[in-house]
Image (cartoon, rainbow, N blue to C red):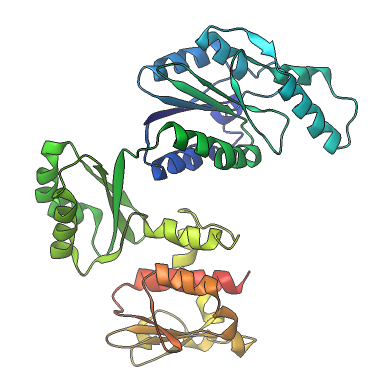
Amino acid sequence: MKCSLILSGDELLKGKTRDSHLKFIASSLHSLGHTVVEASICPDNPSLLLERITQYSAISELIIMTGGLGPTSDDHTSSVIADFFKVPLEFNEEAWTHCCKVFQRRGVTDIPEVNRKQAYLPQSSETIPNPKGTALGIWMSSPSVTLCALPGVPSELEPMWNESVVPKITSASDLKEFEEICIDTIGIGESKLQNTLIPLEKELCPYSIPLHYQAHLGYVTISVLLPLNAPIHLKPLIHTFFKEHFSHNIFCEAPTPFLDQVQNAFKNYGLLVLDEVGISDFVSLHSVLPRFVSLQGELSSLLPLQKTYLLKEDPSQLITLYILKERISLNLPLSLKTPLTKSVLTHLGWKQEDSQWVYPTRRYSHVMYFSLGCLIKILSL
């Protein structure tokens, strides 16, 4: 299903509010097998909003709008949706009852009259439950396009999306459009990768299947969106090509990029999710590693750390890192012998051997640093 996003709000265009909706919604749609073809930020201007909806309705089956469902004079989403579908706004008793209950939960009995605006919804539209705020979401369809409107507050939008919108999207479109192949490589630059991949790109060109490159700090992700109706020989062709040309550079080969896997491992335990910006803090660990890590092994001197600082107040919390010729290994303190640690290290490619965690080669120093960063993060929770 082709989807578009409209993020409304003058505060976004003025830089007063940081947008988090595009990444959240687009990644969710992507994981469901749908394609985001357009996304934009639009000011709180009803004419421009209507123009943008009309534009996107020509290229999308689903349009998601965020913001503009509040009670103030600059909130226009409900009326713009009504104009697009050429229906009137009508007072929705369910929406007003919900709004009143939210105020009562907050100890407010004298409900401001302006909030009645949030109960006027496009005629024949469905409501989307909002467990945290006063504004219900809107779901409305025509034969050619469906429009979904959600509040702009992230703490309201995200549970509404996960609990109500995703099931609606799934039931409306049972079939995924594509399968994604993600391959994370290390030790080789983006330009050299692309040069080596030219023959594979030529093989995929007749089927209009491009390769997508994303350079991160220390590694590169290559992803392929393989249509489900693509010839069956293409998937093994892609995997074989990578194994033949990059066997020593691949450290994660899965439908989900390795960073997302680590994020999910943390999220599954209700912990802080790492993001792309924060990776540098975990890779540039020279200032904090000595407080947590003891270096051992014949090649330990190769790691750029000052051994004189390898001290910690509580030795039982020390991570011991062995750097040998053919591999690196970790001995973990008792406090790190947890299901979360096992999940994170497994995602990062470590293997458990008796009481140690082993990485088969010391070439991938980025993975080693990132792994240590994750462990230190767990220790500091």
